[in-house]
Length: 146
Image 1 (spheres, rainbow, N blue to C red):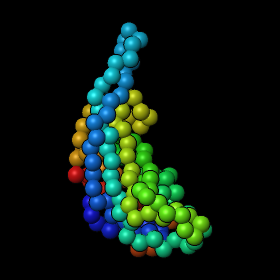
Image 2: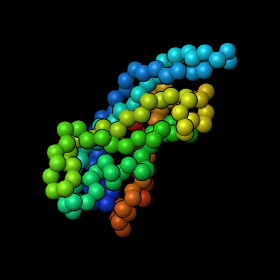
Image 3: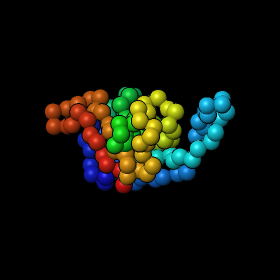
């Protein structure tokens, strides 16, 4: 966390992790929905550099295909960055900060082991694939959440 990450024309850092209360519904054996408490994980991403050419892909579109939260049991929750207070300029949206979030729901696609589902952001890491890998840049990063 708080370390610069270089991917394609962008540099960014995951600066903050937030945990929000949430609930999910689970189907019981008698066919009734039962609410269960869970959490929503949010990370704030601060954009440090945006060298993308005008009228090309914006930051959230750049990362939309390969960003997910994963816990120690291998449960995965896809996410993508959403701009906070974006400004439209030169044919695309620009923002300084983005938020990526996922509700930790045992019924979601990507849950392999609901019995060992992470219960706190510290139980997860955020993985981000680089869709525009350049020589000195990583193909993928994993950031341990705090």
